[in-house]
Image (cartoon, rainbow, N blue to C red):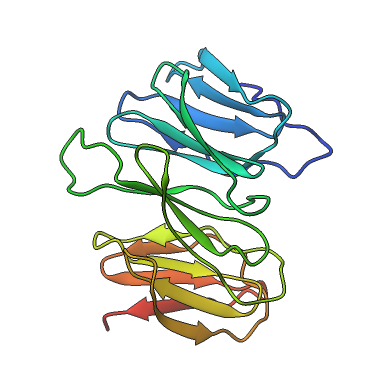
Length: 212
């Protein structure tokens, strides 16, 4: 099967879908929508946030809630597609995907915090599960894009930016260390697995950090 999620040809195509524990596929279209699609390809619901562009990819918590960035805000959706809360403003247009952190990995713990990185110098924002601000760490650089963050089991966050810096922040938002890449721009999505972090720069170089 195939499903049209409403991409606008004038905008960049959206990134990867997310899959919930209920088997639904959640896909954002660049025409202001988030869509829930069942395993047989049936669209179960579509959420639209006015004329705000969807940015990056959605994330799904263990409790079934869906999180999506729309322009300069983040929206939390209930499993039925209704809005739970929205956070405004993230500090700039958000082109990154949302990352979420759970304490523990037993079903079905609620999300502790939602992380998103906006364009410009606003850096990395952590939002509480209730929709209020937890912390925000600015990046001192000359505007531009940031990468999508990745978060490990301890709550540490790996993220890159267009100042050529790769940063790791702890679960309180403090920068633990910074690495200068070989290329000025780092816009890809970071990944963390088995105590290692991976991220690539725009020249095609991939960096690995962590245990040997």
